[in-house]
Image (cartoon, rainbow, N blue to C red):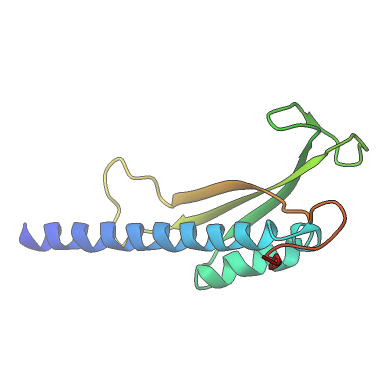
Length: 137
């Protein structure tokens, strides 16, 4: 009985570790995607960041989608739409199938871990200047 409890503890620890790694990898990819328009469209780089962050997990699937809106909280529009003040968002969804050591009752095999997030793409302010510039006093 003690061995069974220990095995369950090890399995749950492995699941939590994989979930934490997947969350961190997805957040890293979102931070990269939100830097500017070039990184937002770099789906290969975004996918690579998630893959590296999870330790190249087998069966990992990554979805990268660009979403656009003409105003904060407004309805979603086509990203080819040329509305004034268009906001671009990137959504990253990562799914990793996780196999437990033992088959547990009520736990699906494989156990699919999914993490998803959306970030608004940062664009330089009108007139250029970029971000993080030092203003004279």
